[in-house]
Length: 118
Image (cartoon, rainbow, N blue to C red; front, side, top):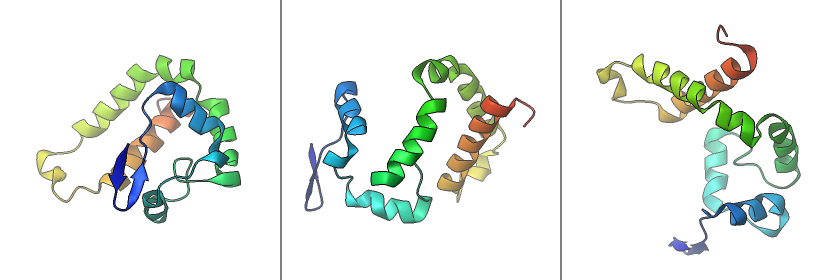
């Protein structure tokens, strides 16, 4: 628990508390910082709320279950390392972090679902 500006904020780390938050989203409110981030990063699962969140969650939960994710950690790490190895040292100056994170995420999802030659 911490103060973030004038708001009291709870950061969940315990899996049981996270499960409670995920299973009962109507009872909890995401911090207003997420609304600002939503403008910058779009309305994906992490930023969505209410009915929009339920729709995103339903789609994602059918694909990304624990066994699938843990079984693919080595593949994800390999894809991330391939991506980072392509960036020359001078490429880290003025690095567009959000854009590159989206690119890596898209590459991981695409290659895991549609094959390595995506």
